Image (cartoon, rainbow, N blue to C red; front, side):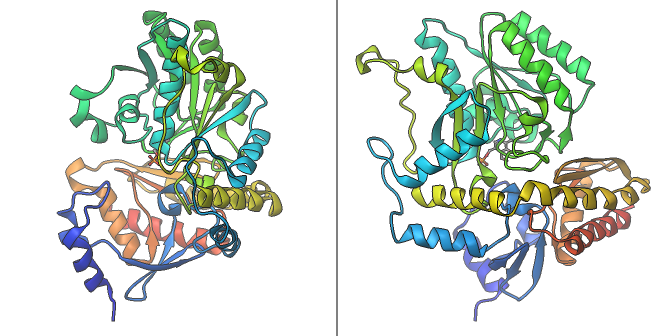
Length: 430
Ligand SMILES: Cc1ncc(COP(=O)(O)O)c(C=O)c1O
């Protein structure tokens, strides 16, 4: 009979888990999951956990969603995968057409990859090579302080979360960070950006941002006005704007894409995570015909964009993405989310009364409660994680920021349950 203890033992014999100090598992065992249904996960001992973080922000419509399951099964009988250089397939074509229709008109071309970090690498490489193809070397990328864009070397280089980046500093490409509107005023952040753009004039290939919410950077939130003004600055200085909507795309901030709220068309739009409803790894980088044309020439000119990944445009993943978009359309998800966003908002004020709470914030289907007064050694986030699991809720605080990023199928009762448990954990940590 399989149980948690046995599965842990077998796992630990060979598996090195991501984003983990493996020794921590001696005192806080990880949870082997047997199955999922809707917003719930079930372990091998029969315990149930409410997934308040959409399994690392990917799961939009619940685990084992019957519709997505059926669509993937259908695709499985047709085509699982095909090399994407020299070949194509129906699900990728459908998905490209639909994403182009959903995003600003200027974004007509789409490059597939298979995870968020790779999408960032592609956007960085494309923007660099765009200029190189035109005979110009632009060797600087500007990003925001406190930003997170993934863990591959280029993505880490434009990120600014010391926990992940610092160790690798010596081997990362040179990047520059401007102040974040999530941490300082919009005005100060724009001044800082302008100063960097002036200082590195002629050398900057692109500015990369996480629109509206710096998720891994403790759910730091800012207003759309910053993005609008930033786009203007990028145009004035003739540099690309890369919008990393890997975490915030597909309805998370209330609109399908966060940039919509700023009325901005980025030069590159990176999408992943929720794109497949949390089923399969897939990412895309969307860009303009102008950019595309800068690479379009005879092969012998050496201007091709030769980036590739084996699982690029995977057919099952594209089908999952098409199924996800079907649900958005058929179930008017953005509208029904508006009600859930209001319910979530109504559940937040009690947190503000707690003396160990510094700030409570929300953007659409993301809410965060920032705690204060804890020394880093205490690892308050881990305490809260442990408490929540013992009470049947999966929360995964980022340092001292407890947040909710539930799947969109969450009910009012489940929102109450997850906020009640978080409240109990925070109050109990006083
Ligand atoms: C904004 C943002 N960009 C990029 C990434 C990297 O995506 P992946 O983990 O799929 O490589 C993440 C992952 O959390 C993210 O939040």
